[in-house]
Length: 248
Image 1 (cartoon, rainbow, N blue to C red):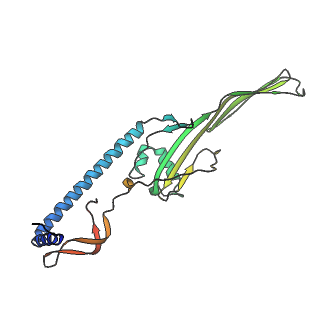
Image 2: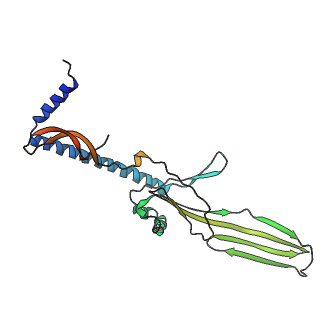
Image 3: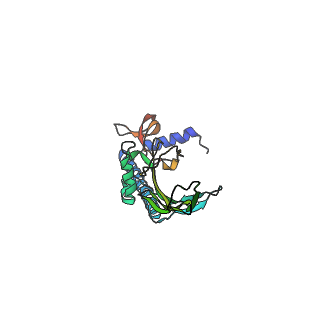
């Protein structure tokens, strides 16, 4: 015999009314335990995935590729953290750089942070200048050098046979940058190099649903089963605050 929707609902309500309070309590406890188990398993899987990713990030080396325009592009595995404090154990230098920006961005608001450093080795070159007027009577050779944490510039100036020449024997520029993004999608960039000035930089974020934390509490319309003060199990519909064991 075919049953329409109303008959199905009536049968379900009738069956629920027959449940005793201890039966309802038992069902609720079982559902709560299943929800806690599912949440624990999900948390363990997330911790395992994060641990494996961070191990790979610690051992990964920089790989270089060529873009369509022929420019070199570097690639390296990044860390995945649940709290900013975890970064201290993985990369204390980057952690300290973020702490140094405390007056600009709260560490707990940081959504991503990248630190990179390197050096530019300029091609050695010689430049010769011809002296138009002989104002220097005797030849000379003078070596010069400028070396600090960020720049090495070495060479020599030589005058002989009525000509002046300058040779650069070493020209290296070092750099480092720390880029931080916060939850308001603001991008902060800093460098320890006192010679660096930022003219322009652009950042963007692509929100991912998988990165959003599941919220168990909610407010809205509800349909369910409840227990009255007399111990009767009755169906109800209304608007209220609810806590979800899991979401679909």
